[in-house]
Picture 1 (cartoon, helix red, strand yellow):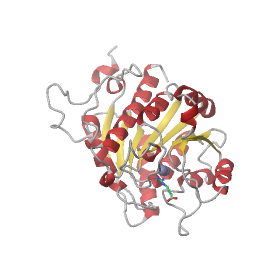
Picture 2 (cartoon, protein in one colour; picture 1 turned 90 degrees about the vertical axis):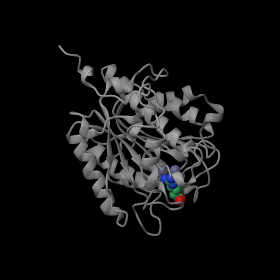
Picture 3 (tube, protein in one colour; picture 1 turned 30 degrees about the horizontal axis):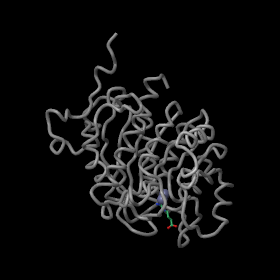
Length: 321
Ligand SMILES: N=C(N)NCCCC(=O)O
Ligand SMILES: [Zn+2]
Ligand SMILES: [Zn+2]
């Protein structure tokens, strides 16, 4: 029997081709059209027509790819080489309509369903948080209602902005209303900052979310947050949505709606590692807006977030999940 991993194509070897040369794909991985089967596709959605404040997340996918060149093959924290366990490839960007939000949402959903039909899981790089809705539609179509673990400063369960239902502040309310979520298993992590009213939190609970506040990291260890998260998410399918503004602006300034008092990148990466063994069916990293970034801080944080998520998927594959 041949080792199926023998045929996997990994990143370009940085000891032969300098990191600042070579392909512009995520982590210098092959393109999806260069390999036979893709277990996990990194795909961009350059869309930011749903934002309520600073625009610019449409340039997120390119920036995260550019900031991912230094990633190395072995992840000691999870004892796994993600690119050697799974065929991971860069599927480029989904071309979405910047002038019509509902059309863009449809395009993302169809593309995501297409990947699922081919047996490919997605790690999607946004783009603003609006895109979580079509990604959740596709995930629920494949798996039934999913648990969501949502890393964000913001609840994103608001109802409308200027009368509009599809925005980056509303995806999880729409997803809950559409029955895409298992309301007994959803969780926000990193919530902080001013709300419109106290009612926001009440509504959020009714929609199916529990909250780990950013301040909880002050009094609790990452390990105890992980314990809480795992208990809430349970055994069923889990979708992971990471708004990079969950990080403190000191760690991720390049984003559209920054809030003070956020997580450190170490806290985020540590919490993500706690997803090992859960049935992670898809993930996104959104709201990277490079125009406000400095020294690739936000890009690097997002690239490492992606790497940890890929490592979780790879560990699960290795462990027979
Ligand atoms: N999803 C993100 N990043 N932000 C939502 C903020 C919505 C607001 O302006 O109230
Ligand atoms: Zn946010
Ligand atoms: Zn968000």
